[in-house]
Length: 457
Image (cartoon, rainbow, N blue to C red; front, side, top):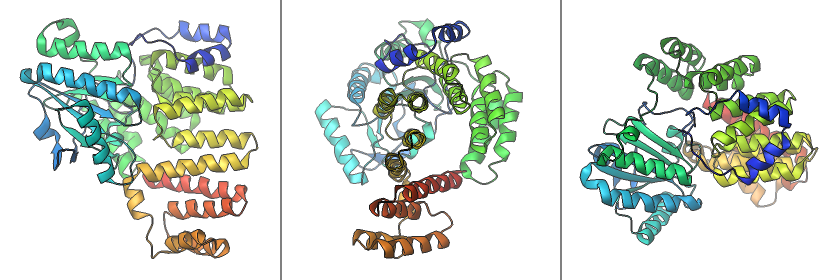
């Protein structure tokens, strides 16, 4: 689904930075095909994950007891995004109009909060102010946010009664919002049957089964290497299925096999030339290889297809940093943060940019922000990493008391004892920052991020 939306300031700036001939060539070989990516690992025709989340009205709500007879709109929103309220209000109108014809609406709040109670209180305030009558749930640990693979907020996913995705919309652009409403009207009111039939490409069932096996093994951390086999099986079962190529490309990038990663993204683009994830990840590989103009042309094409994919912006910021254009770089990072401040990689690439500019203090601050975002968005890590009676907890207390040397010793002891000491690296980095040693702080923050990524494999 291509959405006709005005180009953002960031996109115009990026296109001006690209060599005109290169950009023209890129656009010439990238025809407009319906390849926008709303979710990172799911698409129309695939089953959306189930949920069981706290309701603002009390108790827990799951898909089974909240679904509509025909369609259910899942709206993932946040209090910090201005468009979320527009989407919530529009869903209220659709709900009142079509609830008797089989439509249900479930809004899921995905905000970083200190506690579930705070999140529920904020959601309740929004419900009362907008007079919402459909169920509103709170994803306080962001588990469902990650399960869906949200790219931007708000995100709208329309599913049938079997939880199969029938329509997706990322970012709530004006034209896209109207098309989404038309789809609901067509599906339930019969006004535009041609739109109602537009359910998107549906991969072969065997390919979906293999693809999900790959995702599950990769997510579990156990036998992660076997995910490569499952993704390849998915491609064999359905050669037109693009997502296994995307997942394989990211898998190879994490493993450091850039040539294999580039090959997978190239395969994906051969099948869906405007797939925003494939374009942006290919651009990053070009940036890493020093081919900046080629990479920027791919980013311009990606943003033309979909302006809501956050990595495109922070990859562009990273590239501007390499070109010694700090103002443009920071503008791109700001754009990324407006779209999705929950993406910790945003701050990682900002840190990498400052490293390249020989600014260790700014780099350390960016990497620290990355770790703080990880702690905010990873509920399990937040609950398990800091035990007050542990060496990490002891080091934290000593640091707060100003005993930086003793804190350093306690935290180093924590690193010896803890098999995945993400928090200890973070706290030690803060000690070094407070001691005026940004280089050591930078090293600790980087190690903490590396340990976190290892723990997720």
